[in-house]
Picture 1 (tube, rainbow, N blue to C red):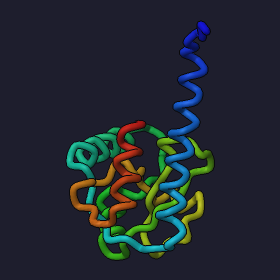
Picture 2 (cartoon, rainbow, N blue to C red):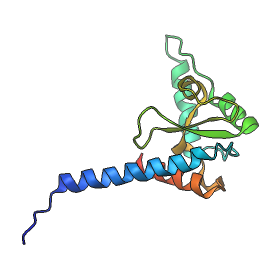
Picture 3 (tube, one colour):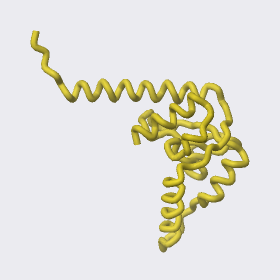
Picture 4 (cartoon, helix red, strand yellow):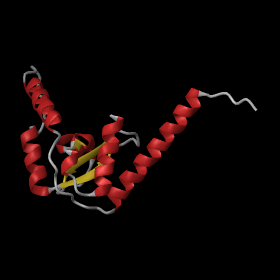
Length: 138
C-alpha cells in the first residue's frame, strides 16, 4: 500500500493537537481560579514594552494606555489571574491583576500576554507549562 504523505493534512493535524493541548492547559489553570504571585516580566520583553510605550507617547494623537510601570505595580500588589482571549488560538492568552474581573476591557487596560512572563520565577507547574507553551508558539 502506497500512502502519500500530505504535508497540509499533517500540518492541520498537528495544529489541532497543539490547540487542544493549549486549551487543556488553559482550562486546568483557569478552573482553579487561582490568583498567582506575579513572577515579573522577561527582561527583554520588559525593555521592549518600555520602548514601545515611549514611542506611543511621542505620537501626535492621544492613546489611552496604562503605563507599564503602573501595570507592574498592580501585578505586584494584587498577583495575577490567567484569562483567555476571545479566540482559542495560541498567543491569545493573557494575565490581568488579581483584583480584576478578567473582562476584555481589563485585558486591554492592564493585561499582559502570558508569554511575556519570566518563566524561571513561576512555581506552579501547570502555569509554567502554559507559559512555556505560549512562548513556543509565539
